[in-house]
Length: 222
Image (cartoon, helix red, strand yellow):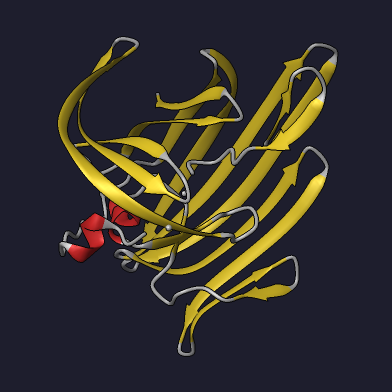
């Protein structure tokens, strides 16, 4: 997703739930069980407090696998300019092991395609036809699942760029979002990418906040 630096210059901003310094959670031996997923999850995307789009997850459970389909759409208007972001992604998980992922992105006309597969030869990631060199235990920056808190390297779902991160556990927190009160666990991700993350008792993301090029961005669970 692209946002302009006023008045007209468009700059890239990762638009999915979407973050490298070794992760504290990983080195301390913390692990998370695969959350029990609902049929779907919807997040409203806010820029500077104004809704600009949605990210929708749909889940299917079959034979110990969790199939995840992600659809992200945003539209931003600044002055007389309009910018759009479209992202579709499919993930196949077995427990907290990602078996494969396919992602297609239209970032205001810039098209990207990423595939990732955890096979017998290890992690194999290809972006726009080029193979990426990434640590074998890397996960995509797909923040719906707490598993990302256990890995020292994550990679972008748009271009597979590697992000070294560390995780700080900030303890329990209560969030009031609309008419819903959530009991959550708060984490801070820092390093190559910064995120504030709140996960519910069900292990699923409730909210994430970050800033890009001076714009405050927030994903809020519905």
